[in-house]
Length: 108
Length: 123
Image 1 (tube, each protein chain N blue to C red):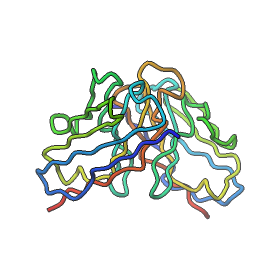
Image 2 (tube, each protein chain N blue to C red):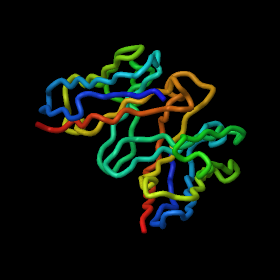
Image 3 (cartoon, one colour):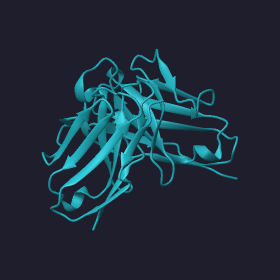
Image 4 (cartoon, helix red, strand yellow):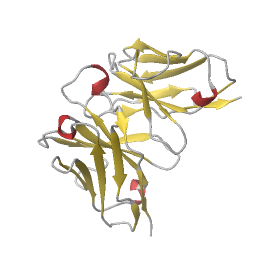
């Protein structure tokens, strides 16, 4: 099983600041990595796929980078609605897809 | 509008059974593989099972293999998860989500999710 480790566990920032979230895979996942956003009581929403491509309808302030084992999700300027939990996800080992444990982005 | 709507969750005793359903609308259901993903209270996401669009192929996480059965009825645009021999650790919100198997780009990922149905296993 490919284990995804996210850091930090919690990130405290203010609106307008830049957020940088990390995800490290236990083995190479090539570029088969995605990022999801989840708000309380809601289903996850796909933000980024194939490491660096924004999903349909996702604002340009969200960007992804990385390949192999190290990946980053960047939110360039935080909006109030961006405070949520973010999960990375790999499909390299399909169908045994896995998710990271999540990073909680909270308002400082 | 593309939509997935789960139902069938509830409270069940350990060792009991439950069948979840996921009704799809707004897209060609048979063209998509469907997955169940669960989330235990306060925890992260865990993939549970996947079925191909033509129903020919199914996959399961080791944690549910032999206890859960995924199926679908393409004539009814509905996905199912039969859960037997339930354990306390199966307590979670269960989501259905769609993706494609033979794909490229965004469609390869779980791009559409339902709102979830809650399963509680407790005595």
